[in-house]
Length: 98
Image (tube, rainbow, N blue to C red; front, side, top):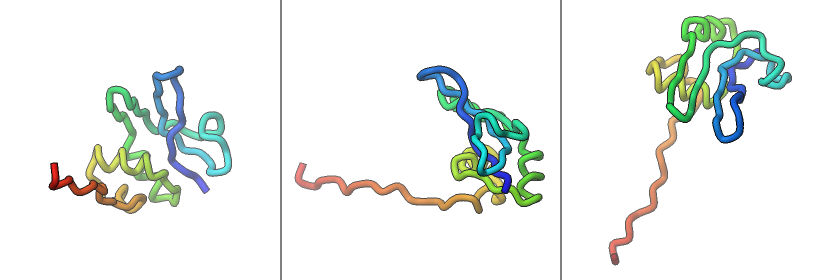
């Protein structure tokens, strides 16, 4: 089964991720078939070939939850929303005694 997921590159404390298409049993760093985009978490920049990703999803490939969240945040496409659950943030109630 093909999976779209992140592959970490960069150096120590300077992460940089590639969005890659890979077989789910192979390591993401070396066994990928195609690079579909990149993500820079330090500057919050996502560059992805969305049309190619949609084509691979239509062919039956799966997507990691993190990649789906990043693409959904960028495009607001319902196709990516089916790969993750929207969860509400749990916040502790404020102390009324203070």
